[in-house]
Length: 275
Length: 306
Ligand SMILES: Nc1ncnc2c1ncn2[C@@H]1O[C@H](COP(=O)(O)OP(=O)(O)OP(=O)(O)O)[C@@H](O)[C@H]1O
Ligand SMILES: [Mg+2]
Image (cartoon, rainbow over all chains, first blue to last red; front, top):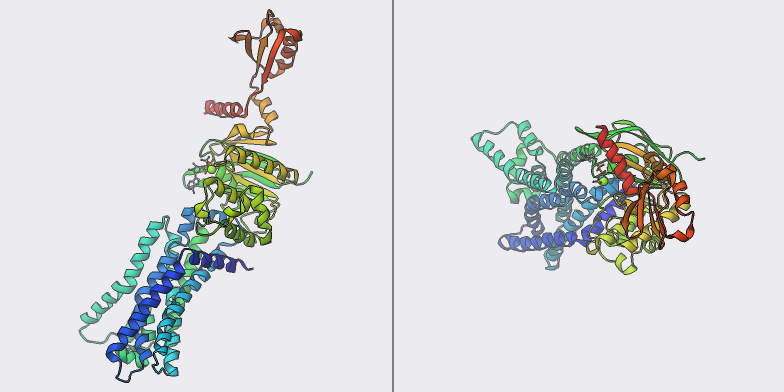
């Protein structure tokens, strides 16, 4: 078995054992169910496709929760093992430091993907079971939403690794991770809103707006899921989306860049770190 | 004679302003059991990490089984076993899962691990419990088990007997002598000098990053020229013999028991004189300098040189 797979397997095993997998799946599932049934009440009979409503509410949930879960999983990955002393033994084995990082990434990705797929999947399944009619296009949009949620999770796992590789103590890594979460999920958008207000209704140059949206992975995610189609109309984000020159593939590329760059940085920092 | 399994030449390691290891050179031969001793902070762990390739020397070279352990495809590490000082594991996994994980990384058949648990004295019931529930000694045994995975040719054990009870210590040294006869090179660092006596082929004493003494116990005793202590209890009515023109300073320690510290070269002749009349001697003890005393001697000499 490949070293990366061996490490990933151990991460999953640990995740199952310390109830991470169970807790995140239940949390996402419970919130998704609540949101989809609460959300369907007011718009219930106006002919809007119900699953599209669910997509909008779940996307908003994802923006808050998935980065948080990913950072909680990831911030401990390197510094935690160093602090507990398990890393010293691990690197004395015939395994490269890259393989350790990729293995952990694969394992954490699997945990997050499982939780998202099954947590959110229950909401869709419950909706389908209540006899609501769901169009094929909506199913595709739902699947795209789950996939992009997992992508967003990968972004924040990678960012979490950077904080973990940089910190000399777990608590520092945890603090930085919370700061990162606040920044991307709350502060950045508030600042962006402030800029838009200060512009007094004059539209920002498209290039600048595009850049600002892509510089925050949660905004890229938001635009990807809420910017177009039925969801765009429902969320009201269709307006902004109309002003940007960002297409779906470009947003996906931005998210992928947000995964690759922090991972590369992690590898660089970790391979130089002495322990 | 085969090539040495571990070679350090002119190795130095600096952590910022701390020189943890300064210009250390030695070779370890196949099948040798070597003790690495020294005060806290002397540089023992740093030397072991250098041999594992976990850190790179600031100067000099390290060769293990003919290769630089810090470089390349880590093929060398497959044939190395390492027990870190105060070893720790993933708490949520069971002992068996832990060992299986390390076995896979070393490409060792996972079915071999049951035998390892037995070798280190970890009961099957304990092996299926989470490591979180282990006592320190059990963790140490699990640590030893992972070091033995894949029958390594070089074992680097950092304070292997810390946390083991006396019975397990004996068990551990039996394990070591079994491995030694199989040709494994074993380097173990320790503070418990008395238990190393008669169990190591060679002792390397490090102090402040410098190897200040290196050799078999016999050789070190020869260099140190520490006196041998002879204690004689006389039979009723006998008198202590005063050989060498009365040069031996016999001290009466108890009723009819005398003690003297004699130089190594006079030892035999004094013993002959004392035992010239077997009927006069009720008891005789010859105490060679212990490893503890040797250690104190070398470190003391070092202290005076500064
Ligand atoms: N990562 C590090 N960063 C800075 N200094 C270090 C580091 N590791 C070790 N040192 C320093 O190097 C010196 C040697 O440490 P080392 O751990 O090798 O000692 P030791 O002989 O194993 O001691 P002990 O018997 O306490 O285990 C000490 O002065 C220590 O403070
Ligand atoms: Mg040490």
